[in-house]
Image 1 (cartoon, one colour):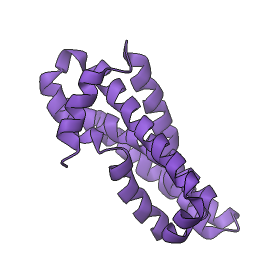
Image 2 (cartoon, rainbow, N blue to C red):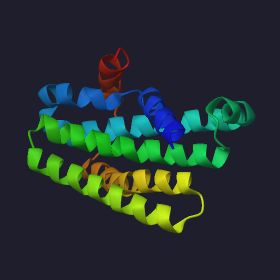
Image 3 (tube, rainbow, N blue to C red):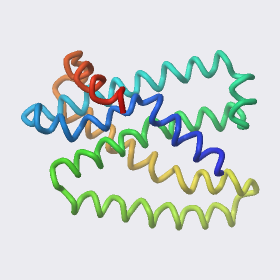
Length: 174
């Protein structure tokens, strides 16, 4: 479980290009086009994660040894990275726009849901480590999926290179 969490934390920052870190600054420069900005950089982040996933598949046996996990768990981690990233984008937007109520409510729901689900799954599943991973990640994936869909649906355009350049200039150094 700790191995999964550690790798997920490291890979989320690297593979998603840390693009969520540009959201606060983008609020200043693209306030009127924030939906398009969010959608565009979320799409870029997803493209990056998917490309790296295929690289991991090509190097599967070496990656399994390095990470100490099988490819099924690594694949699940990539799904988690995509949707936890959507969650992080939305939470960062809430912070930037000072929507602390939404931020607090979502964080509270995530914490309670993860704890309850973890306890239930650990009691009913054979593989306790996997039950704990599911309990920790499933709420993030589900809420992240909803946030992902909402972010994409809010925008008129999901792919704008000017936003990609802007976000990469801010995020890559971080």
